[in-house]
Amino acid sequence: MAPSTRSYASPGTRPAGLRADAERNRERILAAARRLFASDGLDVSMACVAREAGVGKATLARRFPSREDLIDAVFADRMDAYVGAVTEALADPDPWHGFTGFVRNVCAMQAADRGFAEVLAMTFPAATALEARRAEAYHGLLELIRRAKATGHLREDVTDQDMAILLMANAGVIAATHETAPDAWNRLVGHMLRAFAAPGTEPPPLPPAPSPAALYRAMIQTARATRPAEGRAEPGARPGGE
Amino acid sequence: MAPSTRSYASPGTRPAGLRADAERNRERILAAARRLFASDGLDVSMACVAREAGVGKATLARRFPSREDLIDAVFADRMDAYVGAVTEALADPDPWHGFTGFVRNVCAMQAADRGFAEVLAMTFPAATALEARRAEAYHGLLELIRRAKATGHLREDVTDQDMAILLMANAGVIAATHETAPDAWNRLVGHMLRAFAAPGTEPPPLPPAPSPAALYRAMIQTARATRPAEGRAEPGARPGGE
DNA sequence: CTACAAGTGGAACGTCCGGTCCACTTGCGT
DNA sequence: ACGCAAGTGGACCGGACGTTCCACTTGTAG
Image (cartoon, rainbow over the protein chains, first blue to last red):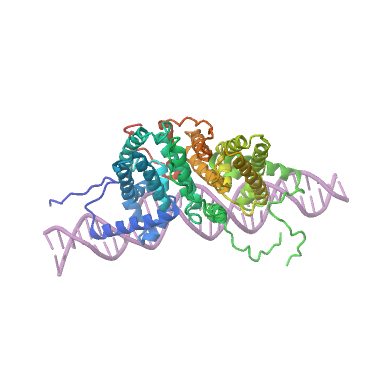
């Protein structure tokens, strides 16, 4: 029979031998997941993704057996942009300028995609495509930090751990403010770059603070969004009055 | 049709006329919630709280109809400590020293109680006891910032919004690291205090960075903790345990 | 001591989740 | 054109959650 057994069963890798309609469905799933992850974070239910994509839950589960597989496929290209940001920064003739630009760029990527913000603050051992790119970017970051320190503009006591911590912190700010104060993250980054600048170095200008009203609305929004089930309707006509 | 005998069951207020055993159960619920909120955040299920307290779900629901009511009762005393921290800072003869100490104290409170970390990053309009104390602390913070600026040690462009942003950022760091790198928050605060210090002012020393291994473990932990259902058998040994 | 209301927890919903099964449909090589 | 395997989605299961109901227990006032 000589069946063309080009079937890669290995999950997580790009299944090249998919049937045309299956490949189309895969793309629709990825597009839907990209949308939902970006707006709602990584915790959206798989059922929601399937609904948004217009496919059955079984199809989603067959193509991406675990949420991590889906995350891996969805954010691979974002991670490419991440790696690209490091490369671009390394190409900057002024390493300190490259470093500050890199930090701002990456944090802006987080702000633009809530799911990606969380991805950068976590590790997914099973998401091999993702983690390979993360490792690559990490390598470049180490070199970028080394060069920036050599110029004397980046403080000597700043380490790559500080970048990880900044990404976690930024993820927290974005989770709280992305709806109503979408520029708040910029303020955090401005402060951190000030802290990273060696004494005598001119730090980048500090962005304006978000308005108090916007921040307050963000804090309410957060409380609501995290616990959506609490929104109760009117109790209605209850027979036994207490 | 029942004649409203005693209708005003205003939630959130302290029910003074509870039967003795009911009051005891109330305390057990509060103690259980305090424990669970502190270790797991505000999103623990009400069923878990009831189980931990050793009471039925109905009892919990009767005493605290919404999660916000429970949060209000649990964190009222923590908020007292929060107000106390401001008061203490205002009593410091050196406003800059008072300010830095306040920031560190509050962020340490967040680190010690994950639920409280989230409370400080959100607003709960229905939690009147909580919000009253928050407003009081906010008032004191404004004065503290004013005085610290007057000494010339706190930068002029720092505002109270920055404190809110710091609390959100710190909540993010703590959510990611509280298990395996419990000192990471300290590093963030150290950087922020550097950024807050006016040029020429000696900023507080920067705490040491957490170990790379601990941070890495924290990032894995976060991914697992957020999505507990994903826990499946590990496919294989982790290659490079960096 | 007694009667009654305040209080209780188990059980029964209704909803949503992730995972799996299976009778259909459909692309595609022939 | 045709047949088969790849692909599909509705249906079903077990589990967790929040809510409500109700028969029972237990303080406590008189």
